[in-house]
Image (cartoon, rainbow, N blue to C red; front, top):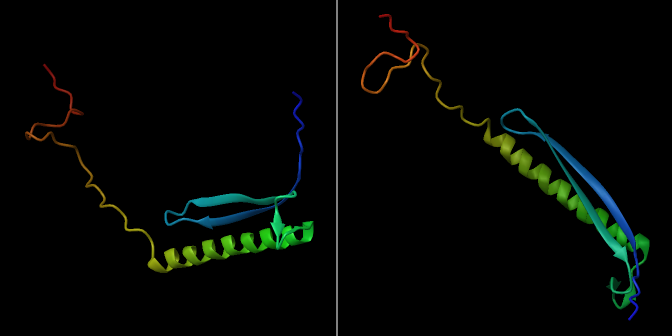
Length: 107
């Protein structure tokens, strides 16, 4: 039995969003939005044209980017992340009150 493989043209748009997180680290997320031109990708019973597909995936991309920017603005309005308590400087002591292991004992 022979199998026939049909390859359909893919229409895609790539979007990148960049931001700085609460710790000051630069972040980046890339996403590819795509659909294929095929007889099963229809709108109202007719096969979608390339221009129709592009307008749909651009709208999807714009919605993703705007939702991301809104969440970043909310996070920025919340303020910087609370810093953990800083440790006191000085030699560490064992729980039983003995001197730290850094100190060398002399015979």
